[in-house]
Amino acid sequence: MTKREAVVIETYTGIVMLTGDDRKYAYEYAEKLLGFPIMTHEFLVYADKLKELSKPDFIEICKNLEE
Image 1 (cartoon, rainbow, N blue to C red):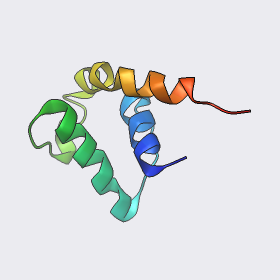
Image 2 (image 1 turned 90 degrees about the horizontal axis):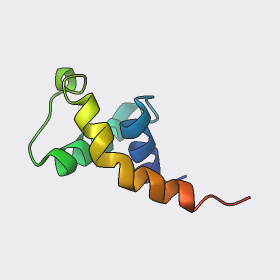
Image 3 (image 1 turned 180 degrees about the horizontal axis):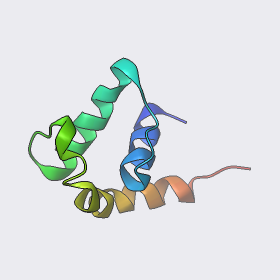
Image 4 (image 1 turned 45 degrees about the vertical axis):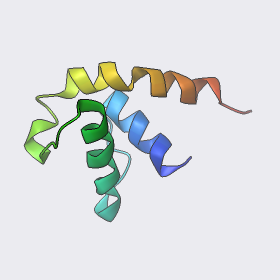
């Protein structure tokens, strides 16, 4: 799984997939989806919107699953 895939899954499910310095990817992805910067305490505020916006990327990842 790539870090981008982990971020998409995290954004859609709410389950933290990346830690440490890799958290920056979650912020970058959220900002890309929302169109503005987001702070740590705002992830809960925008959780439903982020889930909605990340759904197409999540579905694309699911379509590419391999056995």
